[in-house]
Length: 213
Image 1: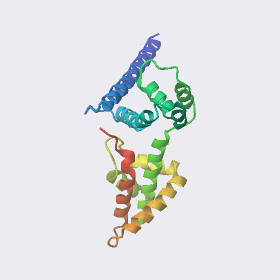
Image 2: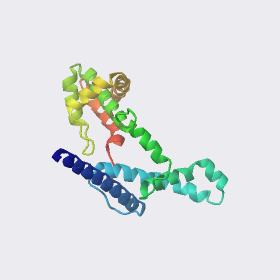
Image 3: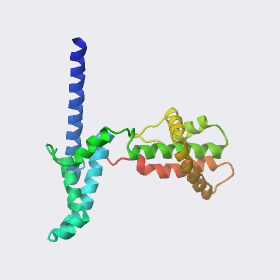
Image 4: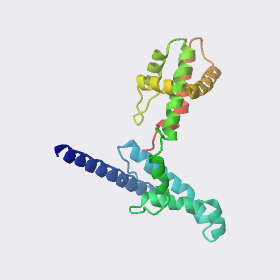
């Protein structure tokens, strides 16, 4: 009986945390739309709220431009996009088919979002490029890359990086080839190729690692 009560309490806590997350996202979204300087300590909240605000700001001019021409407005897809944003930023909006799509994704076998998977594969590619540039083993390469290319919102350690290499090696080698070519194009004194890999890798990863505040 005690275990059942504990499980129910855990479920309640998780449900409250999810509800609070949604509330925080919606509040920050509206703050951003009002051009407020508000921010949030949780990078996940900022990632969702700032992304939604950017999408809304992108489609608002289209909605305004074609407000008197519904035929054109329908063709642009802006009205449909606006409804999706409204569904995600308004409490109680569960009637939109977007939620059907989200539920379908939650029951799928996907282990990571496309964005997260891209970060992991590119990080792995940088590690492989560094390994080749340095002419050493993978372990010191992952240590160097994880120490040199990191961000508070997406902390990465060497062990995680080695796992990403093992799981995504084929795709990572495609990125590694590009990173190595870009690093060689930078030039520099002899022996600086590993450092150049870090430079080009950091530049490529920055848009994927920094969330607006």
